[in-house]
Amino acid sequence: MSPSKIQIIISGGGTGGHIYPAISIANALQKIDPELRIAFIGARDRLESQIVPQYGFQFFPISVAGFPRRLTLQWIPVMLKVIAGLIQAIQLLQQIKPLVVVGTGGYVSGPVLCAALLNRIPTVLQEQNAVPGLTNRILATWVREAYLALPAANSYFPPEVGKVTGNPIRPEIGQQLPGTPELFQKYGLSPDLKTIFVMGGSQGATAINQLVLGMIDQISSTPDERRFQIIHQTGKHKSDQIRHFYGQKTDLLSLVEPYFDHVEEIYALTDLMICRSGGSTISEITACGIPAILIPRNSADNHQYHNAEALARAGAAAICPQDRTTAADLADLVIDLLTDDGQLSQMAMSSRSLGQPNSSQEIACSILKSLSLRSKHTTCREQDSGGHF
Image (cartoon, rainbow, N blue to C red; front, side, top):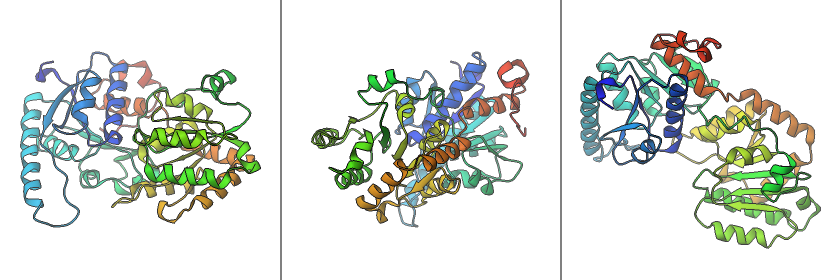
């Protein structure tokens, strides 16, 4: 694709939490208008350089670096790399001349959106968390529109800029009907038992794995163990050890895999999640209306805890801080929830009330409105995208 023919640039990366929402937006745009020409700008040595081309989008690499949390001599090479990346982004955008630049967060989106602003190209961003990351907080007052995952993020943006759309997720998630007997049979599970789904993300989470195994030991050989079955996504590390652990629990029906390709089917079987509270995870479980026990990952900006708080305040989840929760605590909470159908049902309704499974389409329609193309598309005419361009 000739750079001069590209209409939309999308930039975001570093982690899957920034990359996959960007790809979902791009796919939604092309589903509405297959003639749109979309390309990505990302870091040459980060995850996006591998993932984006796999989805068929042109990828332009630039230099990028994250700032150290504290002021040290490391800032000198970082600043040089950031300046180099900004110059590269400015030159790329001058060559491409896109109609709009979309940022989804991560270190790379900062230089790209700044370059767009310097070139007077309209910019929008998408924020996955209740508390925006540093890049998006800096850009908050400069972008034309910010698409937010959770209402709590609204306070970081001017009122005319922020719009709660939810996070872009794969279209099949949230569309799956509740588990049928045939679906339970496919995975070797029982439709007559409550199902817990343990998920620490695509790479797993060692702390969650250890906590859950301790919980199972606490419940083991009691009548409560027979109330539920468990699906455990372990991540690729130590999956064999965890599978062996469950194999010894003869009274507990379990399904253990490093990763589930068709996670939408697993969600359809799930009565209760035990998981992290990253932006994408939150959006997926609320789109499916699943009650959750959230174990936020400890981090400098604590964004997972703020995400978890947003769900807990709505009555959709319980929070178990990783450093203050024992296996016995988790066991007590799990049994309390699984034996209280009324509370579990209320949490499910609260979760679904927060879900926005059509986020990708809503964001895509808003972007198309900014390009004066929205009137061409029935799918966009049927909804109010609320763009501010």
